[in-house]
Image (tube, rainbow, N blue to C red; front, side, top):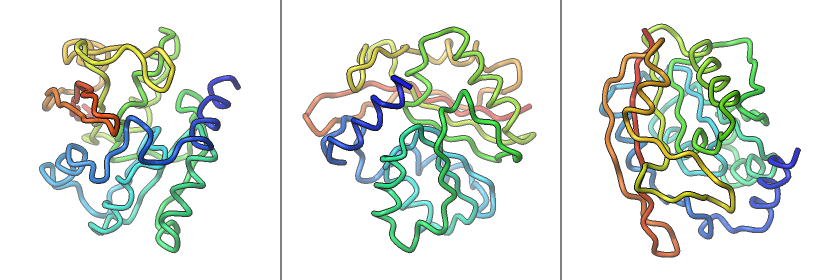
Length: 203
């Protein structure tokens, strides 16, 4: 409950352009969808998306099977309000990812900066097991975390830093690495956050 309360407070007190992860256009994520020709009918899950703008762009690009999961009801309400009528094109799920047990699978699992908040080894392995279970055969996992050169905290919480080798070691049992790279994200306050991104395909 403490974690949920933390994020409910963040999405109640911070404006969208005040949070460090703010991106008016999520270029790195959008490039993943276009470069890999992700089908418009594919089932897509955004994990810990908060009120990011990825859904806005995916709707405009014609994606039809969109799901957004976040632990914060306030975050989900904010993006629903922003999308207006378009919010009907997204299934919103209020849940901690390690408690997520849906009755469906997903062709694409997208996570920019949710996974690195997991600090407990048990929770980290629960996340990996959940992704392995819920991503379809040949489906895609696209994950972004703070790199070893990135921040040690985000939104007042300690995070786990990863390089490509770390992520590959965690996911290689059920996933084949396709591409890993680092990318800098400029925050609204003018700081630079270095990310590790990895694209995996389910075996």
